[in-house]
Image (tube, rainbow, N blue to C red; front, side, top):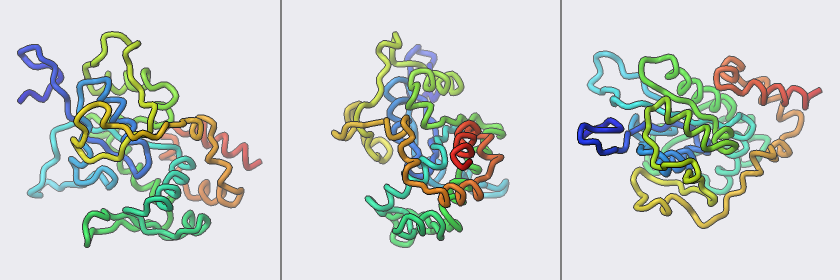
Length: 258
């Protein structure tokens, strides 16, 4: 089977891409936008777990890295942390943490695969360290030989066609549309899906309307008091913030603290 976007027979085939991102980072939305509009398949668990670390496979290991490009999705740390808290309180799967907001933010944070009865666990001193560690791991791929692309969820929400086009150019994806007027963007909340669960484009969606104003209007900041913001700012890795392009967002936060 041909794995390139175009084969010798001229047919366009879906190109496989390994997808990474911490919980609630926008991976399902990203997958939907790209698979709806380009000939590609975003594979969730090609490297073990899309929500876990990109693994270090040593030279003499019996394991091998898949020969596919990667894409990782991030949310800005404040949006990401509040999304994690909401997910944990409503769903509770895959996370072990304190249920009260102040303690959730500051105390031990653990993730695991809730579908495995005895899943290994990743432990972090707090949820900010979790954000730092996983995203640092993903960002380290940007300097590797493998083609890895970073997308900020906020950019994909604000300008989906232009952001997706930039991803497609880096990953050499062929569009499904003949005109940008045909570019499709989800208007409902996207499903949390296992690989290849969808049978048609509509199977990517729930029946819940998607309101992006919580992100575009930055409404999540109302849930953080000054001590919460100071705690996050004191624990964020600012080198990582610069690498992921969140400098402007953090500058706004510093203004809030004055």
